[in-house]
Image 1 (tube, rainbow, N blue to C red):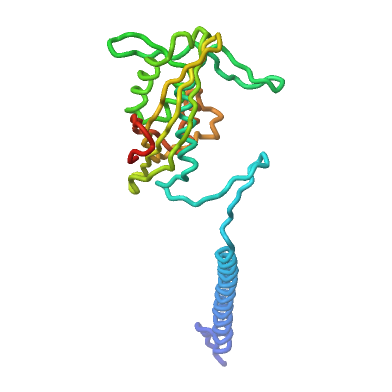
Image 2 (tube, rainbow, N blue to C red):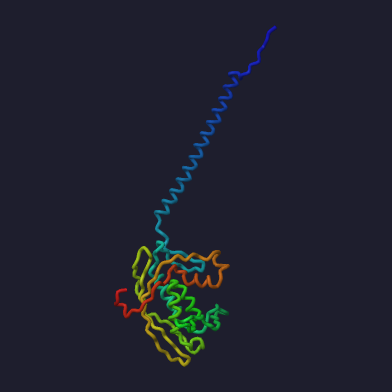
Length: 264
């Protein structure tokens, strides 16, 4: 009788086949890794070429708006503002502050501007007396720093003739000249702008007189975040504040001066 003994271990042939499968699998993983790395290198090379092409092209100077208008593009730091922007901000703010009438624009109808009567905004004067400023002047006060806004409202309330709210007089700030903004602080983003202007007062009979208005405005760069969701859910006050500060600037000082020959 021939006794056969069952082998507990695999035969040499089976072990070699299994070892070959392992080597083939490891080779496949190595090739797959090399292929992935090659794809990554190709992508990186493509991105590098695109960036190189962009770097070699001149910076865009113009941007076209949705309405078809074209604006110039300028790269500025966080504390920088274009001189023209500073001048326009000062002119717009002071004209809104010092031009008074008893009408508020509320849009257009059939191409014609529409207005409603302005009730004015109350202001408490020194000593407790009550005064008023026009709504446009009040809105413009948000372009001033918090410390300046209340001071400006008192000044304007004291200067505004009562006839303005009766509709028998109106004023307009006529700006004769603005100096080029002079930077006085790089770290804080501060400029001074000289303003030579006149407050023109006209009554219902057409008589006119003027009051000299010569000021040195100190302007500061500020960060004005945009209203969330493009302001769709913003209150009327939020829209007014955003509009007054859309240039990312505020006036922190407004002082008298005699002529543009002074050191601004």
